[in-house]
Every structure is written in structure tokens, then in C-alpha cells.
Length: 233
Image: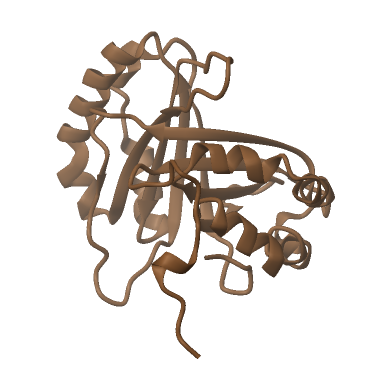
């Protein structure tokens, strides 16, 4: 039997090299996020649903558990390359029912790269992997001023943060969807080799340049990979 080639599958017309981040953050119906594995694997990890998501442009699905004690939420980070595919997938009634079964409440936001904000991704040393991630979400006065401030902040910190194990510093802004006007805010996602280095960095970190463009208080959290028993791709 011949193997499947790239020409055997049809993807959305706008599926290309531009990537988008879908964040799904919510409280699982199990109460304890760590106990949601089986329910996640039966809903978000259902083989038919996974195939459907991939066909519409879902390139990756990663699950994270809260690092802070008492945080009862669950976090998904999905990389898509088709905004219309996202909308089509999450309008399916079976996907909606699966989400309602898994989450008591949730927020899903589609983000696009914050061009010129100083995002970067560095190679992972051999034998290492992501040990923790840090999230920062903040409203900003405007994107033009924010771009300069975030770029300056990244430029000043990249060398020092690498010494403590940063892998990537990704900055995103909301993706306009339909007729709605997205919020003027920035999402920062930092990937780290381990939680200790990450927490040491955040304990001494200062906002400096970016603090001047915040129009409200940033919301931060940190997370650890859920593990290999959770369905991911």
C-alpha cells in the first residue's frame, strides 16, 4: 500500500506558513486538573476529533498543568495555520459538546504573532525538553508603542535569561475574527528548560520598558507539561 503524500490531503485554502496560537484556559469539570487526563483523552484527544482538527490546520496540541498551588485550571496551547479552520472546527456540535464535558468554564483566544515585538526561539540542548512555561497577559496603550518597548525589553534580557534556561520568548496579539474588534493586549509565552531557572528569573525580573506601555496590571502564571499520558501532537 502506498504511503500518504502531501497531495492526498486537502487543507483550508488559507493554511500556510503563518502560524497562530490558540489558548484554551479553563476549569475542568473534574475539579483537579491532574485528574482530567482520561476525560481530556476521550474528548480533545479522541482520534476522530484529532484527525478533524489536523485536517483544518491544527498543527500541535500541548497540555499544561498549573505550577502554582491552588490553581485549579487547565491550559491548552495549540498552533494552527488556518484561522478559518479554527472557527470551523469549534463550531462543530460534537466539539462543543466535548468542550462542555471537559470544562466547567473556559476562555479560548486566537492570537497572531506580534510582529516587531522581539519574539525569539533558541535551540534546545541535546537530551533536554521544555520543563515549564511562563505566561504574561497585559493590556497595552497601543500596539505601536508596545512593539518598541517589548523589543527593547527582549534585546536587553535575552542573554541573561538564556543563562537560566530560556528556550523561547514568544509574543502574540489577538487575531481579529469577524466583525469584532480585538482587545489591545499582548500575550507573552516563555518556554524554559526547568522551573527553577524560570522562577529565579521571574523573581528578579523588572518590567522596565514594557511597564510604560501597560494600560492595566499584567496577569501572570506558570505551568508544567502535563506528561506523556495525555494525548498531544
